[in-house]
Length: 218
Picture 1 (spheres, helix red, strand yellow):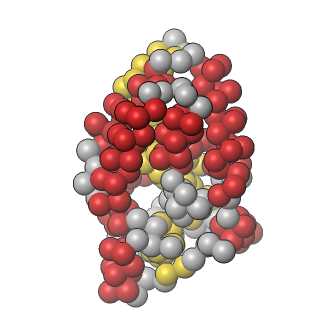
Picture 2: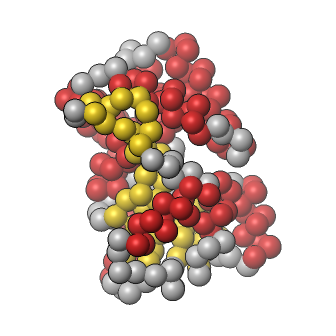
Picture 3: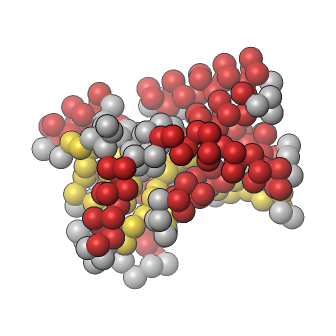
């Protein structure tokens, strides 16, 4: 039984749930439209370029979570799943997940996107394990702060190492699927790296290392 690790955004789903959550908040008037869209787009461009200040981004994204009660946020997220996530589910991704499940592999999503956004998506995909950036909670409400280390770039390795200490698994035979050059640190750690609909930098790196390049779109 090997470890099958998946990135989420633009890998198992055909879009970026982080950015789409911001668009959802803007469209429904839950945040200041012009400011939030501008900043949401700015941070996403930084992520694509590999220059994202993760602490600044999380402070921006967690502010609306801290401003609402949990019942309201859960109601919003149910609507978000229907409007934004369901249309970008990828049948080929679900087939890939099922192929690993059939082999008896342990399925794990590791994503920089926060746990509030991603947990219902990962549950919908039927993947039992998730490492995501954690929004801090106090007395059942979000504080606007991050809890622990964000699972971003090198942080994915650190968080995975901590997770492995709590699970009877190793990296032997491990596979990691990702679309982003931001995941190169972890891609270079696993036994089998797979580039999925990769960005330009990851595509070039995959070709240099003879990593498989896979498309789950269409």
